[in-house]
Image (cartoon, rainbow, N blue to C red; front, side, top):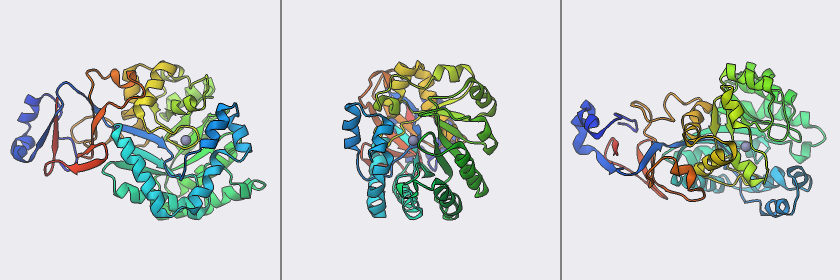
Length: 394
Ligand SMILES: [Zn+2]
């Protein structure tokens, strides 16, 4: 009903639902018998606004260069800036929409989308506008994030503080005023922003009424406890985190978003220690970290497969992390992330017999159909089903 789930249960139960009884004739049925239906994936960490893949970085890394060496040689995040700065908004919008469709084809129905490859006020706002325009053409749900603090651009290399001031005093207020972002994100790590700078950026975000999240502990450890006063929704990556911070997080409810696709693509032997976080009671979300440098994948099933094989999460834990916990990480769990009456009708249908096969058949896409806010999407095309509602049977 209006893109919402009306009833959950057996076909028998659903047919007794008063709303369904009344509107039976207008409902199209999708027969899901013998298939797996789960909540649509909530990919809570993606960087879709870029112009080109980074194939030179890819080859250099294969030859043995590290993340830092590639950045020092002019590759890395900085090499994506020119493409975004010179691109038209329409071109970026088309690119982002293409990614959203690819993601939907793999079972994703909600996407957090970050800016962060422009790093000027104009190009960051342009990136967020491209996200907004792509979102208006896509039936799923987009949560936009300003990542103006992705890296200090080269023109401010000698005066990073000046760039932080631009982020705090211009970028964040303008993005907030135009309603272009729900979250502000910071890449807090060596070679990016210091903890002190991240606090300044968080302060500005909170003052503008935006929620905060951060890339933390990917390359090195940053103390997390001092940031909890900003009530962050999520800390992402979390390869390096102290026992003390893990204990603090478990008390606070901040989600740890793990992105094993980045570890895989960087060829790292170490993955974030998911079991340690779970054992301590820290809720974990899984995301693709879709981006051109370190994780060019749209596939949540691939992230889940890596979570199972490399981080020893069970298939059930991986599904929860890829759906409801992703929704918590975006502060939308009241209407996303699980199949419950009243929640948004976001479903993914897999041509499989058992949910454990989703992470098991890695590298293959078995998603046959997604339902995004009640609208059916079959790999490339979306169409309204019925007039008001869809009931999935199975
Ligand atoms: Zn990221």
